[in-house]
Length: 240
Image (tube, rainbow, N blue to C red; front, top):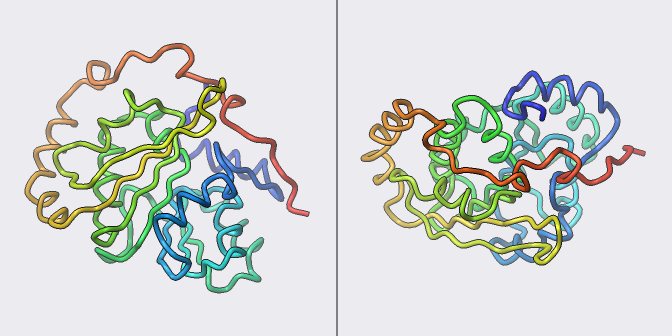
């Protein structure tokens, strides 16, 4: 299985995929009802680990304008800036989801299409996901939504949205229910007082996760949960 948590893996992948696009797990069409329930098209949007997906483009075409796309890969950000140069109000930036360079209380929604899954495949996975959720909660406005689309079942994902530094209402929706390849959309709505709770509790969470042996922390995954890449991907598209 590829090391999806390794930035070098993504740099190489995107170099090889020059001129192509690829959407992990779900397209905008399948997510549109949930997105539009959360915000209107005047909302400020952050797409975490955007890759070479067409999500931002499709949202732009549907009337959203204030869209920030970020990815740790310089290669893919350069590719997507060129691809989307006709969409000047949408921005592309090289950035680490664990260290967001945005003000607090800034976005109405942060969309994560399997970035959490990628981090959980890498080293120091639990603390890295906790750092991402800390930053995502910080940059969301009160009432803003972190939407995480994942192949991970609730028993293996909900704990990551319930660490002591987080303060949001959590729900989830199952897509493709009853099929061999269901996906889960976790909706985390930031609550009043979240920033203060994070400030009070983050140090404890960070210390605990750094001290714990992750092999003891991680749940036992069935073989079906450790899926290969082809189970989660849709066919790649040419840019033409």
